[in-house]
Length: 227
Image (cartoon, rainbow, N blue to C red; front, side):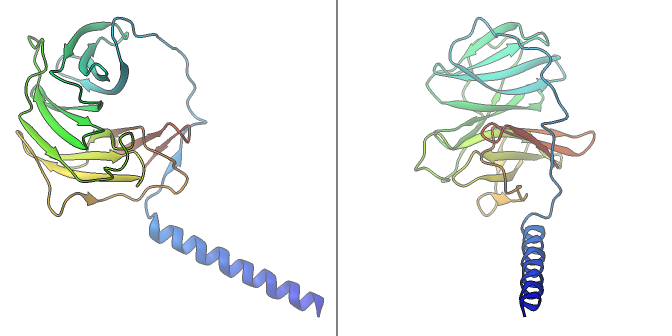
């Protein structure tokens, strides 16, 4: 009788595990690979000459420089590949910038976390003050938390796709369509990617268009996952 009960419990446990695996496969169909054990930090550099918290980072292959954003005060910062500040482009207000992505043709997309807003701006070599947005899109997503909004941007798989990361509450990864001068959405934002269950937040995105890989950085989980 005891052996029979043990066998029944083992069979029941196996069935539960198989069901759980099936649910996870259905809910998270993409393959995500934690990469935190494969990379080691080899250098650290303090970025001097700026004020506020540095956030977001994008590569401009045309100028071969990096661009980042700061909050409090809000600005766009251009850096060389050694991390030296080349210029600081101040904004006209306090916008809580969190992410920046180069779209080509001197056009950049910026996210404003607190305002749940995406904007596009033209920045060239002569820009000294951030110009008014050529397009602005505000979305009604989790307005109950000021510090859990749009945290990451990345050019997506399609030619005009822009990926947007909602940091948490809820944790989401969305895709919008963009034209050369604007951002457009249909049916609000479309949830296009499933996220691994162990992620606590999304702190940054990068899409490798050459290899078709999406890198997702999670600060709270201390991990980079790749799909």
